[in-house]
Amino acid sequence: MAKAIFEIDSDNFLLKAINWSKEIGTVCLFQSNGFHNKYSKLGSLLAIGAQEEFSATVGSVFPELQKFKSRYPNQLVPGFLSYDLKNEIEELKTEHPNPLKFPDAYFFVPKILLDISKNSVEISAENPKEVYEAINQCEPLDIRYKFKGNISPRMDRELYFEAFSHIQDHIRQGDIYEANLCQEFYDDDAELSNPEGLYLALNKISPTPFSSFIKIKDKYIISASPERFLAKRGNTLISQPIKGTAPRGKNEIEDNALRDNLANNPKEIAENVMIVDLVRNDLTRSAVPGSVEVTEKLGIYSFEHVHQMISTVSCQVDPSLTSTEVIRNTFPAGSMTGAPKISAMKLCDQYENSRRGVYSGAIGYFADDNDFDFNVVIRTILFNKNQKYLSFHTGSAITIDANAENEFAECYTKASAILKALEQKI
Image (cartoon, rainbow, N blue to C red; front, side, top):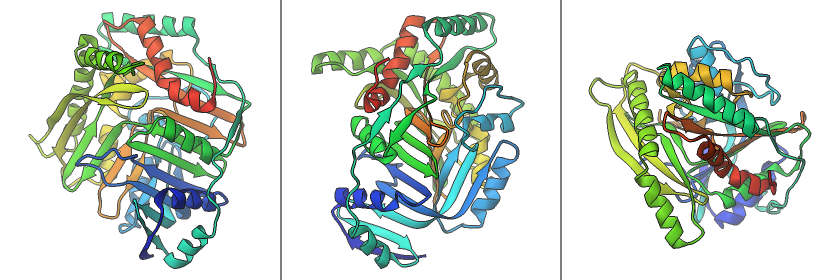
């Protein structure tokens, strides 16, 4: 692939590029929305068209993915891993149906890559100038979209409270000490025109550091994730689990009070500390001995609709391990399971009434320099156009001190941006 840099108007060019890509079967867009720290690499990255594809179901995904990735060592390879890959890693199974019919893992080698910054774009393609001129001749995307349908919770209040009670019973019995109970919101007769427009609307309503859009023919992932699952930067691994959520206030005084309450809430702090310990344990499987450390503890970060408590755990990576082995050793994200991890996943499967699928998995990329970066799939709409099935999940952590009413409300707080984008009230 050749590379060339061109001057652009970034917002207008991105809309033209998205519109130009609409007729192409495979598209992936990552946006960081101006959230940058020392681990950040990407601003806006648009991958268009598949030179080669890797699509797989639970079995031997991680070794096969490593073989696929290894054939393209100098190219960026984006894609996703489904939560259900836990069934490959551990002796687990999922009985819930799969109405979305997404694969358990999908990655591709892009034909065209657009790395978009404020005033320029770097295009990687067979003929970068030809791509640049074709995009410039295209009209900007019409961002209007229409969702026709009715979103319903698969787990109503009564069912949620019943599942909550059972999980707290398991905590009292010593089976676990935390579980992340999730529930699905869905429409099995959904019509959505212009999913790209819905993505841009959600990204405007809820801009986050790990925003992403993936199209694989008739299947769409529209994500506003704020959470990093795992990144590799040189010889360093970084995980940034989120545990602890509070809504934004109606004014500055109320907002600051909610933020302070989150920072000092014993229950939220306990949740975060439990998951940090779990992540530390997961990272030891891939770390140079003695290198695992908590580099930020209980940080409070504010997003459009919520405040979040985020910690950062890092280590030096064992050089004998492949990238997919490192990811397998920590997958799925501990913030989406509970602790102990395997017992919590078993109980979540038992008391949830829907398959998580891509939700709770990871979306990201393997870079051309052997680094990688993956988010946790939360705040995410999944849509199968042919099946007319649209779905998203939310969840919250249950501990011995948790209150069912508060956790149920937290699920709806986390759903608020998506419901607003779909213009739904439930």
